[in-house]
Image (cartoon, rainbow, N blue to C red; front, side):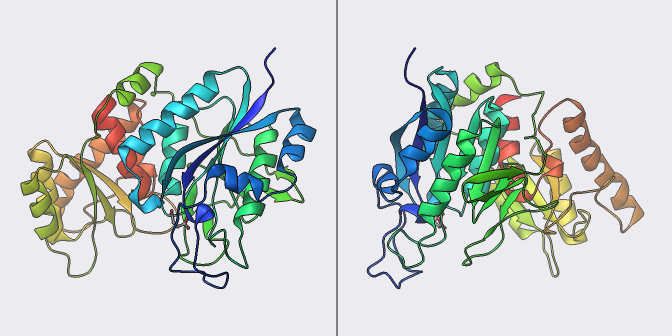
Length: 342
Ligand code: SIN
């Protein structure tokens, strides 16, 4: 039987970032150090993996980017590499080094479309590898400890916490514990390389199939979906401009329970009338929409708004991705999948 391995995939990010000097915690360049270099910075990483599982570490560079620039070619390469690892009986688990800025989207995508039966663990850092306070090596060590535990699903490990792909959000631009599970807290803690699980499983999406994954991987690009936010003094202009430019879907980060400024609401109804998908989410940092989310104001508007809400609820009922219950960043990716593959 082939030697088992834990595969470490590098994509860049601050964890691979380099600054001009060790006191520089901002203004560095992300994605500079190779994944082999990241492994070399953790002296006992191979021993940790071997001691827990007998597996060796295998490193593969997928990209070296700042994750703010994540695009479909990199995502597709990453999806293909993770899929290959999941199908390879010699691969026990996978770890992905990634920038924090769009990690929540990549994590959600991997969980939604691969629904792994092995552990797939993303990790990251808030300080560059050259920093006095570099958090990447410890995060990588913790990620390997989680990977070695064989809990299936996509997990995010940072600052001693393990988050589920569906829940994790970046909530701070600077501090070391910048990631948070938006309700309910982390799924586990990593303490001196012991993983203490608190008992939640990764979310599965029954409507997603292997055929849909093949359809997705065959796409040269994904449908154009934008997030628009409603708030004080909102106008219809952003929605109108996007419609004129050919946008295919809109996720609305509504106020509170998904309410929309009346000036914007008509433009959204117009968008739907033109065949553009419109889904609602909330700009609130916690929770998800409850009941029929929009149009609490004028009754005539309420009726048509409920029609939009009904559409979203129908998407869920058909076993699709639960976009309406996701925060806007993930609902946008869910809509792209929906438009490309359903
Ligand atoms: C990035 O997302 O690639 C840069 C920022 C970070 O990793 O914290």
